[in-house]
Structures are given as C-alpha cells and as structure tokens.
Image (cartoon, rainbow, N blue to C red):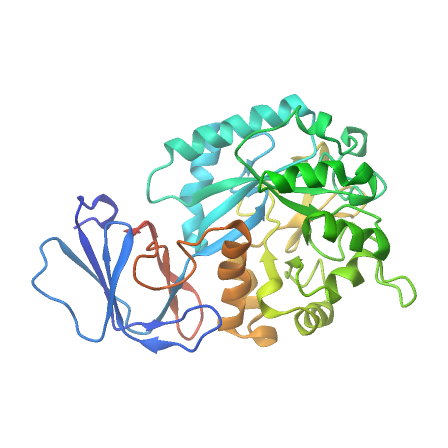
Length: 388
C-alpha cells in the first residue's frame, strides 16, 4: 500500500526502532500512529487493526522531525523571489533532510516586494500536500537592520525600525523578526511586536552590552545567528554577543556548519548557554541542492564555495547545508540527543509549537528514521504519512 495515500482512520505501526526524544536517553518501543497523531507507544506489536501499515525500524533511531526557523531556501527556491510552484517543490524535498516544519525566511527588500512574497508563502502553505514540510510562519530578516552590518543584505533597502514602517509590511503570518535594537527609538517597535506575540530577534546590529540588556527587558527574545553580522566579542566590550552568552533567558541562533563559526566557538556557545536556549539553524540558501553554481540572492551575485555561498567580496551569504547534515557534522561536539534539542525541541518551544518535537501520545506524527550507525535518514513521516 502507498503510505502517501492513506485513507482516513488509517494506522501506521513503526516497529523495532529505538525512540530518541531530544535531550533524553533512547529506548526501544513501537509507535502506533492514527492519521496525523501518535496514539500509542507500546512494547508489543499491535495486530488486528484494519488499514494497518507497518514500517520496520530495525537498525534505526526514531526521532521527532527537525524544525528550521531560519531558512532562506534550497533546490533553487528563494523565498524572496520564488513563485508558489517553486515553494511547493522545496517543501516536497525538505523531508529528505528530516525537516518537517520551518519558518519561511524573507530577507531585506522593498516593503511591497516583502508583502508580495508573504502572500506567495501563504498560498503555498495552504495548498501544500500533507506529505510536505509545514510552513509555520514567516521569519522576517530585515529590513529593520543596521546598514553598517548588512551581511549579504542590500544596505540601501534597510529602513528604520518603527511601528509606522512595520505597518507597511504587517501580516499575521509573521512569527519572527530580526531588527537592530539600537535603531529602535524607545524600543517602540519591539514592544509593539512583543504585544502581538511576535518573536523579536536582535541581529545585523552593532548594539553594545548596555543597549542589549535594555532590549532584552523591552522584549527582545533571541539573537540572530550569533557572532555573524555583529561586532566580535571583545574582552572589554562584550557587546550583544557577550550579553547573549551570559543571559540565560535568551535564545541564540547558531549556524553550526563549521564555516560561519569555528568549532571552538560552537563549543563556547554550548558551554555558556543553557541547553534549552540554543537553536541551530541552517541559514540555507537557494543554491543548496541546486544544479546552479551561482545566482542572484538579495541583489548580490553569489557563488558556491564548498559548504557556503559567497559574494564577489568573498563575504558569506549563507550555508549550503540542511539540518540533517549539520547534525552529522556536530555529533562529536554535542551528541545526537542534545543536537535534537537544538534542531527540534528548542525551536518548537521558541515558536510555541507545543504539538510536535517530542514522541509522545497525542503529538503530531512528524518523525524521522535515522540509521543508527551512519545517522543517514532512511524515512521521514509528516502528519503520519510517509514523505521520504
């Protein structure tokens, strides 16, 4: 039977696998799924159920699906320019990499263009099949950033963070926004967004440690890709990076591809921060898994260079790795169980997704089967249906 075309009230049994929840020891049990939810975790193989599909997970570790809250695209799809069909193709391919939920990340652009792309993301979200990765919101990286730290963003398109300017873009689909807190006069926009339940992230910023502390009190909740697009840590000027490391209530995004950050800096972050306040992101670009070697991204010509893409000045534009590859690359630094916290449970909690990222009864059946030796992905289920 084709598991991608299951009827309603169909059941899937995942048997003989080791269940690995984020941050916990693994254990061997069977998982029973009905439609899109986990309904039982049992020692014995259940029989006598009509429409029972069986997946043999022998030799596999079963985990929750990965959640990428900061991803610009891949397979040629760029959330800043993509048509709906391109987004749908991207969502269909992400389960190959274990990504079952994501925030579509739109970078700095003209307000009218950002609105246009948000509408396309919403259309794709509504029309995507149940077997595709799920868009859980839009991550707006800019345009309210500091043009002195633009990264790959076009600094001429940066605008001042204000409620008036935000209303040029405002949409209920926006779940997370990066802004430069030192430019937010009286933290007016930060407080406005926080009151609406939108996550405010400090990034592309030159905020010092004093401004960072004030921004945290005003409602800033996290830092966008820590150490990237901000002043470096200095022993007499800790800045926003240092402030984020010592603030235990504050999430930090980490691009852990070993290119954007040296492995020793990743170790420093993991030793400094509580384990439930680290979120690993891919920052994946449209060139990831694309047949193209170069393209225009954010108004800049970028080219593949190993595991990253760079502009003409050799400045990093972003990563060419999805989260499954990032996990495999960091096994020696953190261990599989902990990495699942950073790539699944923590972003779920940050985004308020209380119905996924943990294998338990009544949770969404967004699941990955990993080879227990190589940690390559064998199968992915989205909404209880076999997607890969």
